[in-house]
Image (cartoon, rainbow, N blue to C red; front, side):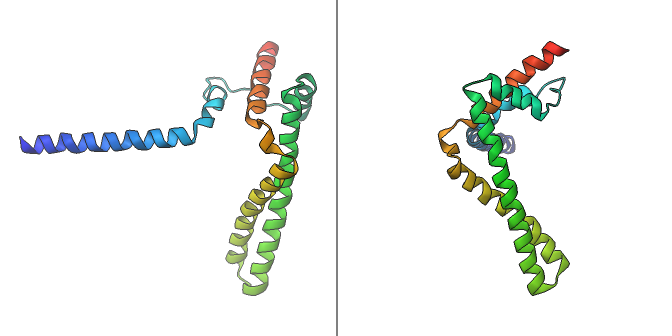
Length: 151
């Protein structure tokens, strides 16, 4: 009988621990709830083109410019990624002549360069003043309505 009580007690402990862990990470990733209605669908939303995005930017005076600025920020990330990947892989190759070391440096430099490029974009384009997530969600809502209207 004592074994059953300790088993139930340990299950309660782990369940309580799991719930706390789940709550902690749910709070940290609460922004994902904004996209849940677009991701968790039976029928996926059709792909959109650059002209569709440009149409939204022209039609929405509030969220359009924000979305345009967020799209421009991608260029900073790509530039940083290329510079970071090539420069770190070049240095690794120069000093080690190791293919796997240069490859790993290329990957890590690309990630670090992307991150640095996004930080530069954040300050250069003053993204911290804009609600880019709201603009993206508004675009997704607009696209969902438009694509369902065409179906």
